[in-house]
Length: 109
Image (cartoon, rainbow, N blue to C red; front, side):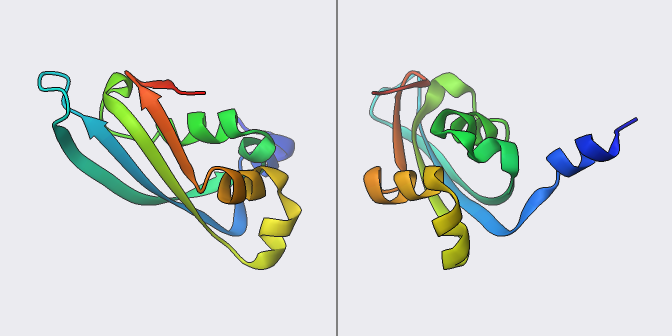
């Protein structure tokens, strides 16, 4: 059974969604892409502590094997106040343009 504290920690942040575009490569034919996945997801507070946590959160929801992933594009759908409140979101948007690149499923750089 979840405690009240656990329920609060798992509660999605209101007015914040991430639109995700996951791009994959066909492992049997390099440079041939598998159809992309495009979806929106909600986020819990704990996930916004670091880029790594955000990436791991998103990867929980993708359908293809991790080793096929070549790029994640993230678009944060939120009001200005949310953007100002979370440094991790600002860094992803303004420094990385919302894009993360992978080599055989491992995050580059």
